Structure formats: C-alpha cells, structure tokens
Amino acid sequence: MTDFAPTQTLSFPGDPVPARQGVDVLLPLAAPQRKARLLVVDDQPIHLQVLYRALAGECQMFMANSCEQALRVCREQLPDLVLLDVVMPDMDGFEVLQQLKAQPETADIPVIFVTAHGGEEIETQCLQAGAVDFIPKPVNPNVVKARVRTHLTLKFQSDFLRDMAFMDGLTAVSNRRHFDERLALEWGRAQRTGSALSLVLLDVDFFKAYNDHYGHQAGDDCLRQIASLLKAELRRPTDLVARYGGEEFVCLLPDTAHDDALVLAERMLRAVRGAQMAHLFSDVAPVVTVSLGVATREGLDTSGRAAYLLALADAQLYLAKRTGRAKVCGARLPANGGPGALT
Image 1 (cartoon, rainbow, N blue to C red):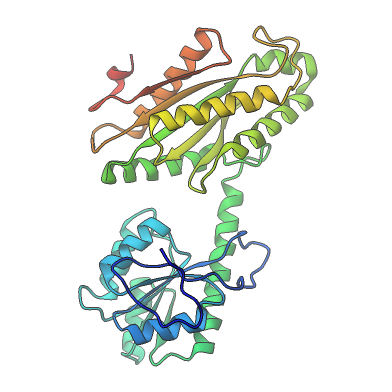
Image 2 (image 1 turned 180 degrees about the horizontal axis):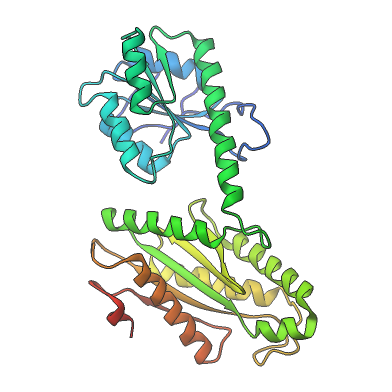
C-alpha cells in the first residue's frame, strides 16, 4: 500500500490506506512509543480530505468511506480513536458504534461523532450512544486537533493504567490476568476467522534446586533475565509473553501456524541456554535451561474452549520434562477436540 504525501489529493480505493507518518502527538509519559492510530470515517471525500489535512501531521491515519470498511479497519488495526460520521449510506454511525461496543476487542476504542446535524438533541443522542465527544460540521481544524489530542491523551493514560494492572511486578512482562483475558479474546477471534492460534508454555528446569542453592534473590534475577530473553524473541506487537506462575511463562501467538510456533520455541530454548546462567545443581546442564510445550489450533472449527488449548500446551510441556527436559514438544489441537483429545 502506498503512503499519502502531504501535498497529494486523497484517493479512496476499496481498502483503507494508512497515511504517511508525520510528527508525533505530544502526549504525557503514558503515551506508547508509537504514533497514535486515527481512523476517519465519512462517505464524502472532501470531508475526509479536510480531516486528513488537519491531522496527518500528528497521527498515523486510516480512512474509510463506508461503515463496513470502518468496522474491518477497527478489527484489523485497533485504532486509538475514531472520527465517525453519523449519516452514512450503508448504516448509520450509531449502528457502527453499537457493533464496536459488542465486540470485546473493539469495545474500548473511543469514538467521536462528526455530523452536520447539530443541536442539543443530536448531541445528547451521540453521547448517550457511547461516543466520547461530538463535533459539528463544518469542522474547525483547530478545534478538531485540540479534541483529538485531548481524547488521545485520555486513551493513552487509560491504557497505561491498564498495562500497569496487567504487569507482573517481578519480571515486568504481562501477568496471568492479562494473559487470561487476551487468550479469551484471541480464541474468540480465531474461531470467527479460522486463523491459527498458538501457545508456548515453558518451565525453568530444576528451578527449586536453583533457589535452594543460589538464594531467592538470585532466583528472582534469573526469572527477570529469562522474561527479558523471551520478550526479545517475539517479533510482532500482537504476540504476548506473560508470567504464568512461579517459574512458568506462557507466550500467546495469534495468527501463528504450528510450525512457526515450534521455530519460535526453539529460538527461546537456545536464547535461555545461550545466556549461560550458571546452574551447577541441574541434572540437565551446568547452565539454566527451560522445557517448552507448544499447542496450536487451526481452521474454522468452532467447537471446544480456550482451556483445551492451554491443557494441550501443558501436556506437551509435561512430555518435554518427562522425556529429558531442555527440549520442545508440540501438538495441534484436534478438530472437535475436547479434554479427551488431549490424552
């Protein structure tokens, strides 16, 4: 896809096109280290062009000229903020907002309604529907920029607080609560779309012996270093590493086929062993090692539950430990697989 240059006239093909990146929005420390993603939805090219010119220097922009297209962009790109016209040819903005609120992965995306229909009644209707703000047409570019900055600031502060609540205090990766929520979301998405979903569950080999002989402070340092090594092996922002409990970690890998998940698990295995953390009380090696279990669900099968995928990863981890440790074992979740399919 081609980026827009600031001097180009906007064109609107069938798929939304991200705008050329400009200067970052000035946000507080809670802002992520990336440009804010802004989706503008309007069926009139001139209105899209006005908003693009006002905001392209501050955000990574996505443009949609239909509600169906807007919903697709929200599912695929998860924008930080949406500017949404109320009156659209295929469905109105209220229905779009209702559909966004109905899906867990898009429910928290803030929406600002932009419409030519002014007055207290329509403004009240917009806010009661769940919009965070209301901007009347014709828009004032300076007002739009100010309100977008305000709501992006609020969004990133909210994200920051949520991330703090979802972070493991020792290792600074995600905690079990965050993993459980993300697994439920990604499982639902994989069932709807038929995309692959993989898990890597890993355990530090002979960690009790490590703690007993080197001390708990050294054990904490070991877990922190392992968490950092695992995180460094992830390549995509949608991938997640979390502390599962004690010396166990789990990696959630959306849109990842089984063979690719096995490759990643092998990289993690080598990364931990390659760190050369001394462990003279291990029965496997004189350095710290990990055992890993990989599980993948693939295809359009809508049966089963996310717990089955986790149980399969746990069974593969147990197999790796039972057959020598410091290795990777993996399996695919059978179609229509339930607990009985894991034995």
